[in-house]
Image (cartoon, rainbow over all chains, first blue to last red; front, side, top):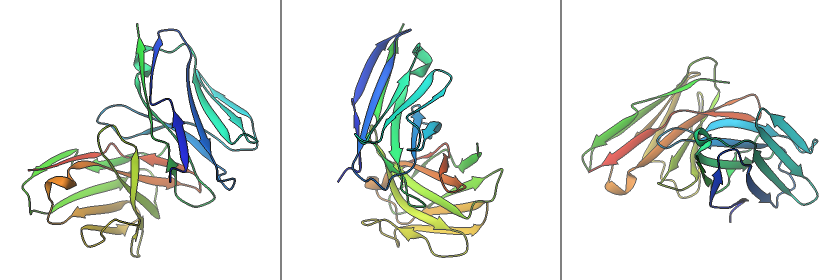
Length: 111
Length: 114
């Protein structure tokens, strides 16, 4: 059973546009929600993370929006650049337990 | 963030041989490290949690005798794939946890078993 559902599977965005990736979860015990960026042949790199006590967190061009009642969170990449082309994974965990990963979104930003 | 290294970055071996992959936490002491495997175009699958000084905790379906984990120090964990077969070919990634939440990943090791 997939603990964290991620969509879309792939996404193509024009340079300068906004990329939006969505994730949903069921376990209300989850209290930490990170996003990872992974380039081909590399390990995932932590991009940004949020806890459920805030509805939004912004770091540079990356923003997490969090809807606790809907049990959904999303990553917004503003002014998307070709260098942002990568696979993005959302994840969630409860307390000291392990991270559950989404299935990933392959983002392609075209010039 | 934490700096995590893995060695080797890629390895090709013959079927039946054993391969050891090292994971090092370079800038802090990690009592807990994690080992994941990732098949092409798929998500990360947790294999086991490596605890310093004690036995690793394996996820359901992961053979502990096949994937030997040793966490001998606070900065080093090793994964040994014993008697490797072509189906073990995958991308193996370790990670360390800083504090209670943040997890940093290594660059991964590409294993190809011929």
